[in-house]
Image 1 (cartoon, helix red, strand yellow):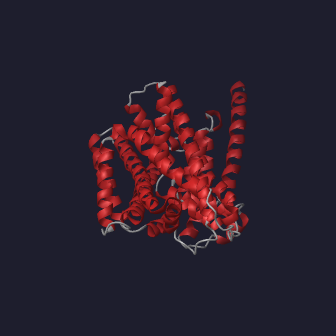
Image 2 (tube, rainbow, N blue to C red):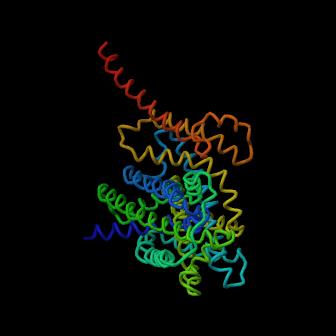
Image 3 (tube, rainbow, N blue to C red):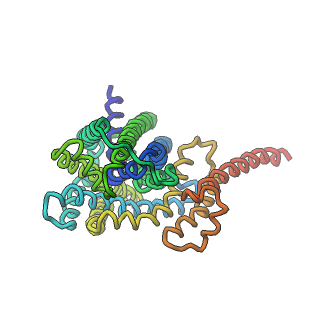
Length: 430
């Protein structure tokens, strides 16, 4: 059936749009540092890097709109500011990081070229892809993702059955917390609200007017993508843990290079280079395309606005992409601590049924999340004035000070909504 084919292509495309630089280099290193507690780390990582992002696609399937719809129940101005911040973060951090990873792992080991040259060629190709907007889902789903999955599954399978020294005990105090926070660095929750918009617009370009059909394609496509991410992340974390006792403090990229060589020999490094380049390229294409789609929609569907934004996004990528992976990861921490809690809360609220998410509920929960995420954000920029307050906030030691207060605010908001609804008929009768 056509629907089955469309679901498969969409699912593969969503997977490839999610699976970028951080998704590849972070999991093996988590397993390496986690040792025999790799499974607990995997649970945390999967929560923030699989469950939340896939719920974001589910939310898009229900909303059938753009990212502006995610925050419109709070206030239209809030929604616009939120979208601008998310796209600014996406186009200045995870997008350029893909170019840095590509240079360090796919280009520098084989060619004597500067990172600036790599970034320029890399984003030049992205420019071509993004300007051919209507074909993106088909190209990613039919051709690039199957190759990505084949290489990854081969590396994981061979490494899983090879003999390795017994893993040493992890020195990580809170493995689940570590997994959750490292999952932030994949940018996948932010990716969900960007990628979901790309998927919706791509389906609209195929002239699918039936909302039910688009919802089915997105939901099942998200399930396929989520299953692939779950399999690959768990596998990469596991094989990283297998080398916990056999390597001496490698970097993230060094560990990944070592794993590919151990499993596939000298050919492995070549395949890894292709894998890294493809994974990074698909994510960066989705980010630039999603940002340009947003600006185009904001300016009344202007094709010129789309083209200018694509060019600007690629130029930003060239400039920042030459600075190096470690630097980009370092400057990303404050941005993530500021925007990520709001992104997660909006994803969860929009994924819930309409009757449980009124405007009042949205506003109370979002304001609470903003307030209780301030201590973590300030700490990330070395301002510790509010640190004593964290002793009184549940889960603050896990770096998620906002979580339980937001849950509590949601429950209180629901109760207020219920009592208000019950009071209105009584006032009408009187």
